[in-house]
Image (cartoon, rainbow, N blue to C red; front, side, top):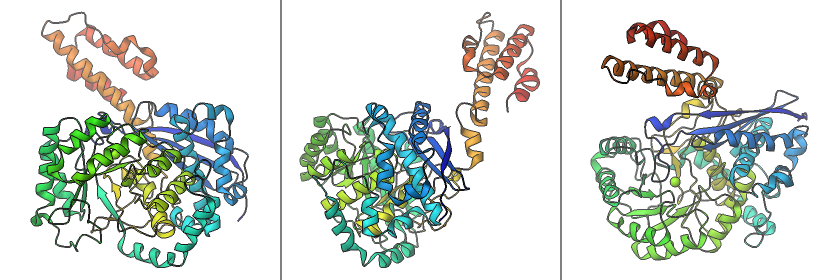
Length: 531
Ligand SMILES: [Mg+2]
């Protein structure tokens, strides 16, 4: 493969207005605008690499700044030299001592490193003409271990142990690859259970999810026990009722349901509190949910509280309710301790909170050693696209098991990606097969143009609509004889606006003075001025 040098990069702060519909809402995150801090690495050839990390809106611009600091470490590097030792490439990204100080290996700088490391892996997969999962499962055990981030985990897993584990699984890799291509990878759905949805929407979306073949469902909890029980009973009344099962249902698609509080149809419910409770609160609250029979409580308390999770797990064991966490576990050392402390039943890696594929590999290997299934977090833009690759690597090359696993699926925003993930009629992920798709995270340029913040066409138009709404209410008050001297608040913050918008406000003020009708003003000014 001809070598090339990484010569430049660009970042984009892309935000989708999901807070308008309540998508993504839970007890902690009440107004999510699903966002992508997106990076593209360019080389001296036509080879590129795309990566991103996920945030929920404000602060995405800070992550983009951190991505610039991390990505600049790759400029001038030879691509083939990087690909030849991805473990060393990962170490290089983290080796700036001044940037390390603002972590280390946590927070903004770490999720920014995740975006860049993922972009490098995307580039590597594209260079070899394989989807990312295929690139990794085709590696020899030695190559895979060499690509893994091993620093600080050797007390739980040594390179030699990892090598032995991978060699033990090597002979059946082809068989497992063929199987998962045929039947797909097990999935569960979160999209019916966001906290911001009313009961009617929860019921409707649950029926849709059952009809789509899903057998595992997750609901957000933690704001109000009575409301959680009511919503949980609505969901259970649908998923446990055979009348809603699709005609094509074939058992439960090979899922293991033992020990999961499955209902009569084999359906499983999980609940997710997104960190809202102290440890004793978590124990008491979740005991109160026992009637809706959850398999596990996800993120019951602070994500860094390893011993707290262990205490919750011990206390809930008699109730048959497990503990899951990981989407906010910020590095492999947190996972190491969660596993060592026997604090979790399910390990929920996040593809870009961990610092990219190399660090994910270390957690997949540790989880396999400790016998804990990995069910990645994917409730966010781009995460489903990323995580199917990671679950395939786990199944084919590392743990050798998918029967105990379920990968999260959320229905939102896949249309913005060139290679969106997809689901079978049995509610399982299809295997990404396009040799050009790399890590499947490349976003349509049109989506970036529309949703880039603050100057993408959607956001400019949105601000125009805000001006219209403010103007409309202002004029109504004036017509009622109220608030004769009211002005536009936005006008006192001119830095917020682009020059064209400042001109628009001036026009609006003139219109107020001339007392034109709202309709004629809108026709003559706003419609023309706002794209
Ligand atoms: Mg969660």
